[in-house]
Image (cartoon, rainbow, N blue to C red; front, side, top):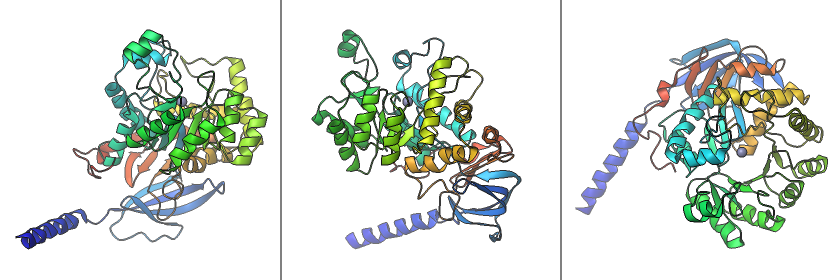
Length: 439
Ligand SMILES: [Zn+2]
């Protein structure tokens, strides 16, 4: 009886395997121009062969397999997908009704509603060419994990999500709630995870790992006492046990000093980063996710002084050769713009800082893959890598604003946008087609 059972099971497994082995679809893309951001140059007349979800071959003479579907992008510049190294897709605060104060967004909008917003924001990001988003907390009760799972399992289209789960900080996180609200109504939570002692630090990291984080995000100095370098080292050590890195929200020079001394992976925001800190970051190879907000976003005013500081800081970081990522923190509504379009407005700050287009393009592509730790699997347009790519008119090396006119997007080998129009049908499924075990 047992033998029969084993035989039947083996047959079933074999049957399932056979069923899953439909030949992968092959697509050949004719790229009139192909941008190599690493070398900062354009190659002409390249063919990219995509098999299933991966790039199989790239080159001027790559053979187009018989039966391949041919996509003609000979009038466009094909390039690797874009990366926003700091966003919050399940958060959208607004001038109305919450006066851009996200504490009220958190009070008024459920995690469920915010998860649906995240699905929409992810689609909007992908439509603008962002194939990877690092989603750094402020997503209610793990809406960021739900978004990543929904995309990875195959329910909806979206960028590859590198998510942090809940931001870990001293009691209260970035909020300053009343005692009644914090203690009687738990109103800070789940937006932040309290960790004020070494035991709490270890436990908070483990909670985020358990609930699907891919990177750990901490508030280094959101409270006056902040974290010491030793405490940050504990975060780094605990995260490293599962191969994860730590990003620190930093707003003071002292916080930056402690984070740098502890060897943190990346620092978010620029208010704590002066010339001395930039030099230390360059020495240690610490990523800068400056979240360099431009001064032209409707309903989200930035004072001329604040903008000047932002531009000067980014320029100083560039001159000091700090590893730079394109990062926005764009977690608010700008009337008339999609989330992806808002993110691309940040190109203004980079241009105003005098950073050459080739280096802006490196920051928004290859540095993005490195800070996301996908650089060996996803990002570069090379054989064996995930088939993610986009196409824009013109030459982004000459005019970086070409990125605002993304015409074509391929994600994991499926066409998401063609001729400037989203065609996402291939991404929607009535079940977890890539496997329910994806956690
Ligand atoms: Zn942020």
